[in-house]
Length: 193
Image (cartoon, rainbow, N blue to C red; front, top):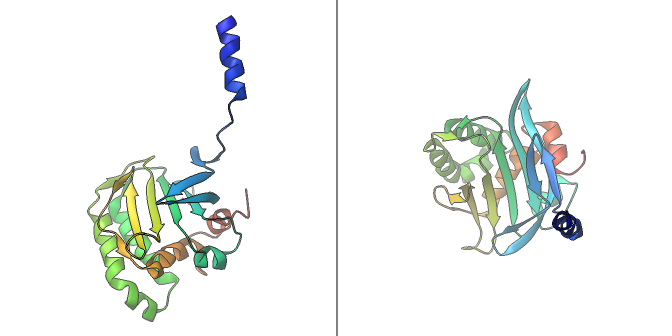
């Protein structure tokens, strides 16, 4: 009994790890991205009708409630996508380029196209992204003049993609004028619980 009480007192004296939970997936309140620290700006779930697709979180150098500021903010950034069902890589390979095209003019897409195709090829090579996998899309501004890096469960997938314009195009899938889901955009911007 004495050991139990000592263990309980020690546990109660430790600081609680702050987390946010979405659809059973927990996201830490901070994340180290490259050499920088980021804060959880918001998290939500992508669903289609009654199907839960993925839980998602956005990390930025500091919190904001506006898409404009999130897009223009300097420093490292991270999007975490956690599939809630097994998902073919092909589904992401189709959805991400389509989301970019919905939020950009034909001229903007033309500038991004080779990099969009590189990301698409990487995703097509992944047969299945398993339920619960942690997919990170990171903006690393201090690496080779700025790169986007895709990792799944900590393993880099494909080649890094250069250019902040490409990372902003990815962010626009969820934060643009034609987001993949309006309430998810609001969640990522920390506007709704």
